[in-house]
Image (cartoon, rainbow, N blue to C red; front, top):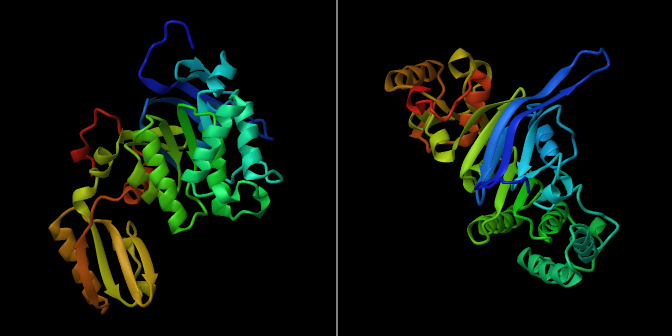
Length: 332
């Protein structure tokens, strides 16, 4: 650990940047002066569209990519200067279960990764058995990973990340490819890790409903910069009071115009759902009048609970930064 560095932060990122060259010799800034802290024991959501710089940031945290500028501390250990000790602070699952070996059995994977992180054989066995039972895979411990379903491979990858009992867990798309039952098992495990074992859990995902259910705080990255970093409830209330769902019979076809361009539109089984922001009652009534004029039957209008997907899309589209001192009530 860095000398005299005492903090309640599990992750401290300061002035982090990554610049790549390209074939034309023009530099490309993937990560632009990012500053970010994650508290110990926090379940933290780290979001961004493809190309936002999120994955590059995670890879720099994991020591897989060297920063151009800046510093990363994991439980006070400098990733650049104390690499080995810093890496012992984290367990990582990258998208696509790339941290497990498919020709090995589930048990062999756990023993290998326990040894790699410096665990004794007895500790690896004890934790490996507990994890496989928790993830309902104990009966398959001697089966080759290649023969597992995608969801089972994902669960094994998380078990391998946890076998050395790291204080920080970084998960890229932890529920991707899981069925409903496996997703519930995974979410319950992640909640217990934070609540009962005080682990710091960092989740990156495009499944924003999972992030909304699990995370206490969320940061959103866009074009290499952090554009929002707030407690989840505060972030949701950016637009919560103005969020509606309109259900109509049939499909809109050629009726999709400027009034609906900011809405999420889903058509299924002869019904269309319009979900989005309506700032006040006057605009709501105006929109309903326009729908009626188009001859599209209205089924229902309902105010909705705040939704992280809508907040995310709105912030990214507006490309506006939301700082912790901003008055969120004035944003919408």
